[in-house]
Length: 425
Ligand SMILES: [Zn+2]
Image 1: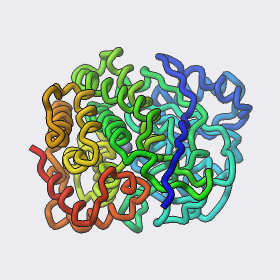
Image 2 (image 1 turned 90 degrees about the vertical axis):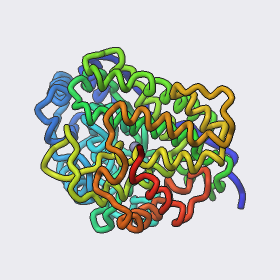
Image 3 (image 1 turned 90 degrees about the horizontal axis):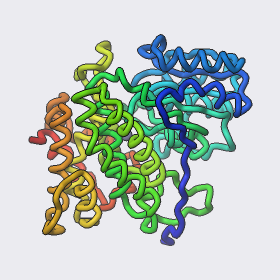
């Protein structure tokens, strides 16, 4: 096997600042868009981030059509509905306003409306065919309203494939928004639990990007176009991920305790973008791979602050519940990097031995999870030991991320990791 020798750094351009949502009309006009599909979810449809966006597009003479049916946890069905809307609407640009789900829905709508194909064509292997996107898409500008997914910087769209009860996605550089409008005014009214889950999602993105299999230990691609967006940890993504870990660890608890703390909230939102650049290039690994069945197989858990109409383990919660066990497991692959991550989270690592690296990092994560009110393990969101085999089954096909585990992981290992994640403290 020939090993990879190159890595690249791809990201959206970012505009950050209180009030920059008002500039989105100019941003779309600059891209030459005249008729734009604005994608959001029903809970946001009449809220300020959306009304300001529509108004801003209107001021620049752009015909804006609102699509407010993005699902909070998108499925193949909800993607297909948005794709249909996009195909019928004949749009030359897209604006997504919302969390990762709205942004991911807009990416899918843009992709299939631009290059119509059977739905499984671009879906990641082995679930779909994983074919590369044929060319550039129409301009998509993303306006995140949660501080967590970093989806405004990535070429990844995640959805729940209902038949398999598991999350999978579409990943290609061409899906990446051309611009992220990162406006702290848009996260002021975020319910606490949503702020906690999205904040811990971005923290885990950064931790995973930093500890992922290094890019030069991955097989080389057959040709440059096959180089994955998730390349493994590398010197550039590490810079963004490290800084994100520091900023979130220092500020997230402050945001949860006092959402009116503009400075802390702004920094967490900025950190989400940093983490997005980190994992969008470095990739993530087991906490994300294991999270997909945890979200996909939910029975009746309904977290506070989320829409009460359907059971849901929010993405960030599903990810972070697995994180302590994973980092105890992966630390032996690179103890120095795991200790470094713990240090960035505020842990004193003087005199720490390499054998303790996993435990120290796990402790740091547990500490922040407890402070922001996460449930105590998978058992607190409805899973028991009898569910573990199914959870493993749902994780194994997540090659895109599990392949980046810094330590090879077997089905037996995954089983133990899920068992260790049932109760955390
Ligand atoms: Zn995530």
